[in-house]
Length: 250
Image 1: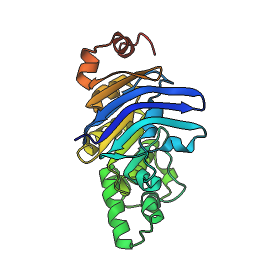
Image 2: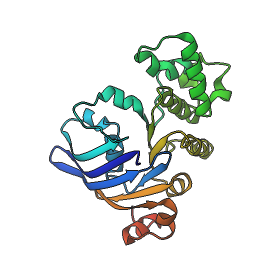
Image 3: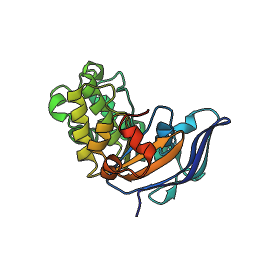
């Protein structure tokens, strides 16, 4: 059983087509990397899975996307509830101007959950999952903005985890971070896939090779190749893929 399936996806911003006939299937508890040059459509596809593109004027999607067998663009889907199940971590850390505790508890409170013991337990569990608990446990009332960039990004991951998603989308989650913070995020991704299905957009070839089980290479809105990461990086079928991963273009 696949966790996520995309079939014959075409996307448009107004009259401009961005994705052209994309089909791929993703198994649960795996990390899938989307690679390709800027403007190839990988972030657009990523945002199709939590319907973030709906917020963009004149966006249109043709085709079928299912998560756990459910058509996520069906009129019956509660989009707010859907986004709770598909967490998103952005390129730049974006903590709220609140305390560490309030950042993690935010999604729970928005959903009407106010029980103090439950909130405290969920905040601790989420921070532990995000490998941040030991660094902040003695000062949860500290403003999130005072954390380092790497800590802020792990806090944003904790915030996404608190509402118990089943899928986590990451759009270049380490591109704004130093090498040490990047290594921590990569270790975290490896741990999180035991419980979650993760899709990551990255420009960093080494990162894709290190963290992902499957890699999808996009070029000019088309999915050129999708295979096991080890095969993509050692023996790709497409010359375009070979040229990209060896730095000949992109």
